[in-house]
Every structure is written in structure tokens, then in C-alpha cells.
Length: 209
Ligand code: B1M
Image 1 (cartoon, rainbow, N blue to C red):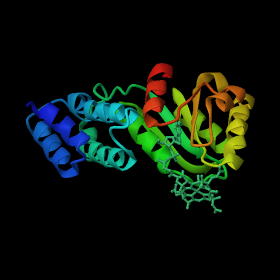
Image 2: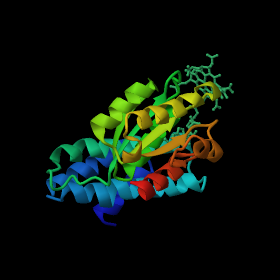
Image 3: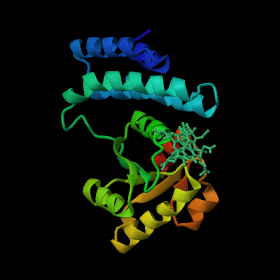
């Protein structure tokens, strides 16, 4: 088995130390950092995404796989040259105002990152103004908003309205997620998409970015 398959398998199996070890070995052997990411770490996370979608893997396992991917990224990312580091696009993600839930949002962020996107996680409890500022600063291809409370869903609409008022709504695609959110709600408030989980969110980001 090639070392690229080996590192991908170690990501799938959530073997944090093994991923770091193989990543270092590949770096020492002079392999290109971008190749280690694409053919090793991202390839592994793609399998994780598919297995999660098919319910062959569950949240705790996905989190450990994501941790493994990060262990590899920590070694490889600092070595990326500008020419090497072309990401698939940028995604800003956060949980809306009044809402402190971040486990699902973090999982979604890691899966999107695992698909090769640059993810800027702005955290929890983010007001419409803070979201507008983040979009102005990072100019993402996609903005992802998460809400876990029915009482904070209106904050998603407020964020979209604030982006409209700031004149930058059309510069970014907006996707929503979180347990109480639905496709109907996303359509109603003018978002570009809804995803029930990290796997669908990753597919949606690939489609929209
Ligand atoms: Co909270 N809480 N909580 N809570 N909490 C819920 C959500 C609740 C359903 C529990 C219940 O009553 N049965 C309920 C909401 C009811 C409602 O509004 N419908 C609730 C409540 C009421 C509250 C408080 C108000 C309780 C209180 O204080 N009285 C309070 C509110 C605090 C606040 O936010 N202002 C509160 C607090 C908390 C804790 C801080 C204790 C903790 C959060 C810790 C943290 O996140 N760091 C917590 C937790 C852990 C939960 C439950 C138990 C678990 C949530 C979770 O992490 N699930 C939850 C009950 C439950 O869901 N069983 C509950 C695992 C996670 C992987 O799934 O977040 O759904 P989830 O994410 C999924 C998808 O939704 C989707 O993909 C993820 C992966 O599959 N997804 C996206 C999420 N974001 C996405 C974004 C996308 C796409 C997909 O694109 C951008």
C-alpha cells in the first residue's frame, strides 16, 4: 500500500499519531505538501464524509478523524508555498446571535476543511453586524450559519437582511444548518441552501463555491 493510501486510511481510522508520523515521513521524503493534503488527508476525509452520509460512521468517529486530519495538516500546512496552497475556496462559518451551541458547527467546519476549503470559524453568538464584518474581511465564497434553538433562527434572517443592507448579499452564497432549521425555512428567508449535516454541507459548498 502506498504511503498516501496509508495516511488516508489512518485519517479514516482516527489514528492521530500515525497520521502525524506518516505526514512527517512523506515530508522528509520530499513529497509535495499539496499532494500530501489532497491525496492523503483530504482523500481520507472524503471517505469519512461518505461513510457519515451512509451512517456507517457516527459523530464521535468523525470528530476523531477530523482531529487526525488536523494532526497531519499541522505538519504539512506551514510548508505550503503560495503556489501550492490554492484552496478550493473560502468559507466563513459561525453560530448566530443568542446561540452558544457549537458542536455541530465545529463538525461541519472540520468536514468542509477536510474537503480542501479554507474555513474561517468566527465562533458562536455572532450578531448580524459581526457576520457582515466577517464577510467584508474574509470575502468568502460561502457563508455558513448555524442555529440550534428555535428562538435564534430569526437571527439568521437578520444576518441576511444586514448583508443586503450592506450591499454585499450577492457577493456570497449563504447556507444554513442546525437541528431546527429546514429547507423551507432557508427558502423563506432567502438563503442559497440548507444542509442537515456536515456531509451534505460539504457537497453544497462544493456546488456553490
Ligand atoms: Co442545548 N438545546 N441548550 N445545550 N442542547 C438543544 C439544542 C435542545 C434541542 C435540547 C432539548 O431541549 N431537547 C434545546 C433546543 C430546543 C429548541 O429550541 N428547539 C436546547 C436548549 C433549550 C438549550 C438551552 C436554552 C437550555 C437552558 O439553558 N435552559 C441553552 C441555550 C444556550 C444558548 O445557546 N443560548 C442550551 C445550552 C446547551 C449547552 C451549553 C449545555 C450545550 C451546548 C454545548 C456546545 O455546543 N458547546 C447544549 C447541548 C449539548 C445540547 C444538545 C444536547 C446537543 C446538541 C449537539 O451538540 N448535538 C441538544 C439536544 C440534542 O440535539 N439532542 C440541545 C450534536 C451535534 C453534532 O448535532 O448540533 O444538531 P447538531 O449539528 C448537526 C446538524 O444540526 C448539522 O450538522 C451537524 C452534524 O450532523 N448542522 C449544520 C449544525 N450546524 C450546521 C451548519 C450548517 C450545516 C449543517 O451549515 C452552515
